[in-house]
Length: 174
Image (tube, rainbow, N blue to C red; front, side, top):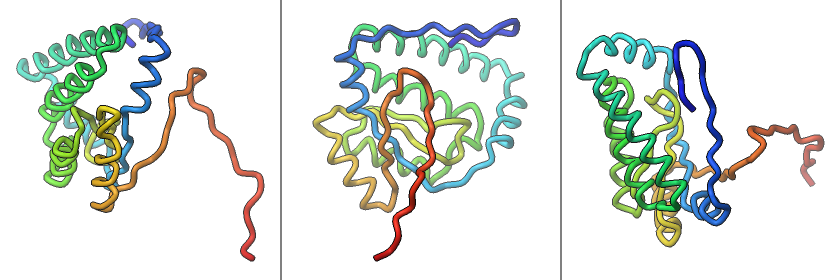
């Protein structure tokens, strides 16, 4: 996706199905259990955008996104995972509200348990981490996250976009 003042452009990525399957298998979604106020974080980022060093970080992040796109298209998933780490390191410099000691601890321990990279989804400050971990290390990472009280959430890619549903029947206690 390209975000411009006059329009936003969506370029679908045509990733090979085997690459997409391996990527899906190599991602771990982790609920940090930390609530956050994304409005405060966005306000903080907006205030800092005037600084030239922050604009430079954003430009680096844009270049990194193109590199990550190329990694995905070429099936270089470990490179994608390491680039995800670089993107997180850049993002956390955009505002002091994006991360915290607790979030940094979760992240560094995930790296110690097999993840090559990851990022906090959304504005930051809490919510969900998405980690990239080679599939053969995934189980080790999941065990670690759950042993530290974090919740790993299953997910899958959906080619049609977000789909929701409501459970029609509730089980009754026996």
